[in-house]
Length: 166
Image (cartoon, rainbow, N blue to C red; front, side, top):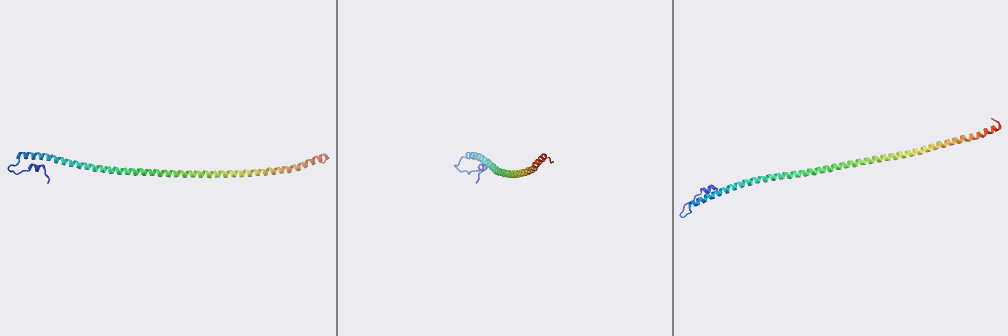
């Protein structure tokens, strides 16, 4: 049973002989009613305050949940960015290694061409030297061949001069 301040003010007691002093009882009941009314008001205010606090707590919990979700999203985004950067670095590194390998292969191929060219030039030099040697030797043989008849002819001419045959 809920008792209100109005119930206390309107409460009437039966009269009996040798009962309590009516004015004292009514004065006390009035004082109890005033105190009870203040307690009811305080209780109502406390309940309203409690309700507001509960709503604030619910709002804070909602904000906390949103902040946690945001934090998780930010961490995931950070991890995704790091992973993307790692993949991009891997791709860039792979591309650089591939280009370096191509450069090395190109340099090696060029080196092989230069070595082949050098070997070809050496072969051509040997062949040229051989051809020049053959030409020089053939010219020497020709010179010697022409020199022998000329030397034979010179004594004949001189011997004819000596003999007067001309």
